[in-house]
Length: 297
Image (cartoon, rainbow, N blue to C red; front, side):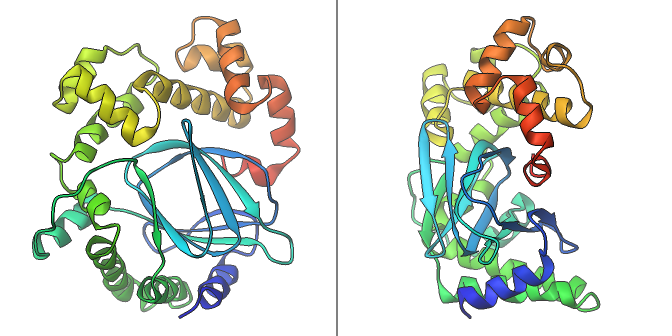
C-alpha cells in the first residue's frame, strides 16, 4: 500500500476540515485545507500517520516537524500546539490517528518476547513509516465502508498495528505505555492527577510521591517527557480549559479564568495572551470567525 491509497481512504470519510471521530473505536481522521493556523489541544497517546501534507507539533520548548515519511507516537497526554505547514484546498492535509489503548497494549505485551531495555525520553517521537504500517492503516480506514464487517475485523487490524509498533523502532516507547512501573507509567500517574485536579494548587513533593519518585528525579523525568515543568503543564491545562469555556459557553474572561483556578484576572489575561498570541476577547473573535479552527479546540 502507498500513502496515496491511505489518503484516498481518509478523504473518502473526512470530506470537511476538522478532527473527525469515526465509528471504529479509537480511530480518528484529520483533514485540513489551511496551512499555518495553530491549534492548541490535549493530545492523547496515539499513533499518527500523515498521508498528505506536513505538520509541526510544539510541545513546551521542543518542536517536532514531520510528513509522510515518518509516523509520530505520543505516549502521554500532552498539551501541544499543532500547525499544519503544507495543505491547500486542492491537496489537503490528511492524517490517520489511532489512539493507543493501554489495556490492549498490556495484553499484547504479555504475548511478545521481552524487549531489550531502552531509555525513555520525550513522550513525542518520530519513526520511519513502513509499508506494513501503511497497509494496516489503509485497511483499517477502509473498514469504515463496511459497517457489517468492521466490528469483527477492526479489532484484528488494530492488534496488527499495535504489534508492529511494539516490535518496530517505536517499540520501547509504546511498550512503556503498557508498563505501569515504567518511567512513562509513573509520569502518566502524575499527569492523571493534574488533569483531574488542574483547578487546584498542587504540592510538588506529593506529586512526586504519587509517581513513586524522589522530587529531583520526578522533575527531571517529567521535563524530559513533556518538555515542560509540572507547573507549566498545569497552566496549559487551565488555559486550554478556559478557552473552551469561553468558546462553548460564552463565558467572559474573568469568569472563565476563575473557574479554572485563577484568582487574578490580570494574571489570567497575561498568561492567556502568552500562550495563544492574543488577549481573550480578540482571540474569541478570531475563533468565532474561523469555525474550522474552533471545532478543533
